[in-house]
Image (cartoon, rainbow, N blue to C red; front, side):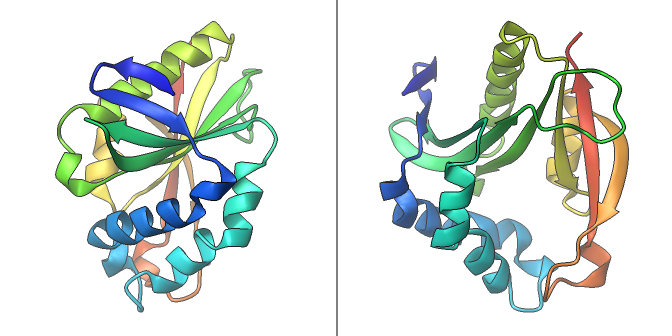
Length: 179
């Protein structure tokens, strides 16, 4: 368990936590993203959070996967990949924020900002030069959140997932220099 502040902690996810994570994401994901999908996001949840994909992500080299715990309740997840390069960027040491999901009832309380601050401090301690992530362009609340935290646009790509409506396929890569 890592203490961010007295009411906010992150806890490493273990293989035995699969059901807890899957059930959490069934609660968190649809309110924010179901409108992106023909099937309300069922395909994505079952694909992204399948046991096989979960274990692959959990055991990926140089990655950390956490539950976000606020006031002793699991309210989200947070995944980091150390040394994941942002293609075409000239600095040496990159860290990717792969995932940050928080339950909507806890958004707007500064939790995401505190987690990003913790990650930035940890990355500086480890001599990383840049943090980057993929942000759904059409999910403006999240996209604007990262911009307010000092992240800048770099490039974009278009997702090719099944069942996703075309207008939501744009994924922007954003970054923040730490040097």
